[in-house]
Amino acid sequence: MATLEMAGTSLELDDDGFLVNRDEWSREVAEELAKADDISLTDRHWEVIEFVRGWYAEKDESPTLRRITKVGGIPTKELYQLFPEGPGKKVARIAGTPKPEGCV
Image (cartoon, rainbow, N blue to C red; front, side, top):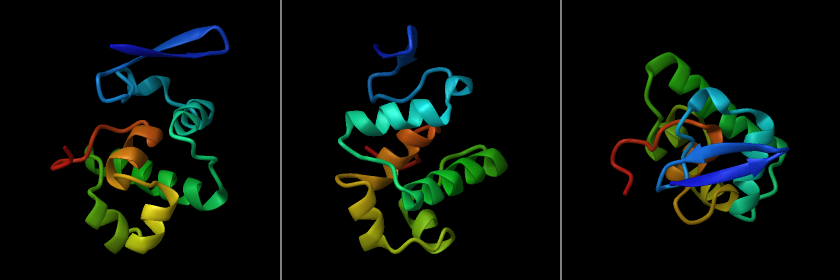
């Protein structure tokens, strides 16, 4: 297991880089997780993150890439631009939610 060090606090991450304790998520944690992937979060990133967090709060599961594009209204091409190389898994990790079903 890895850890994320920020402001004198260590947050435990699983082998895929997801928070072990989802209650430790904050916007600051998201910024640090995104920074590790060379992503600077913009307002559009936050719209996607908030959609993912809202879906998780309501359904108790992370939305799949298809759900983010179809229900969230974020075009697939844009999602890949915002969160390159595996956007479904990457946005879930940054949003502090579990890995979506079907992600490898």
